[in-house]
Length: 232
Image (tube, rainbow, N blue to C red):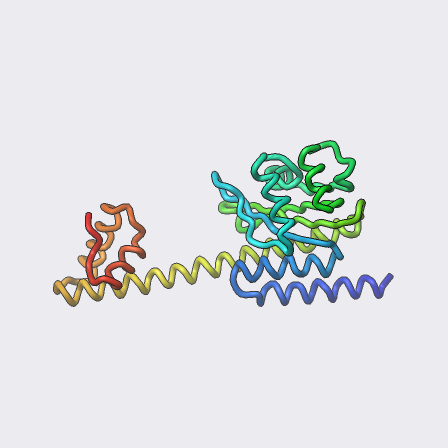
């Protein structure tokens, strides 16, 4: 028993290192689904991220069949994925061949050869700006996920949530730095061409941004690329 506990601890220690060194958001999500295959011995895995007011995003799957299973539920707004995403609860389907909660979905998934499903919620970011997602685990065998698998999936989901939040934060910071650089370059062009000071050059960029309903960084990029401001 002690050996099993030690091995599990080592596995998740390795997971933590892999996730936090994965790099960007896409790389982190790919690491999550690949690790799920190893840690849980499932046939397939995938991640769905919610988009407020928009169609959920499917950033990573280990097999195209997972995307099919996700899209079936997203199109009909029904299924274990939707329940897990909306209610932030774990949803287990022991056997799609006999499950009666979502009969149309279950019959189609069983036809695809998938018999067991375990959907575990993800919560990414701080409470004020939190977004939600689901880690989906799939097996070709019925009743493939027991209490131990569910516990491991919970731990994986917690690691994934923190790693994704970190990757998104770093991505946001990188974009902000890039935007500042672009605006600075555009201001320099205006200052040199028209003899403006920094405040006046920034005011002109901001006015064009507002008048054309274009992001400030995009106005700056256009000026850098064309040496012209967008038409109002």
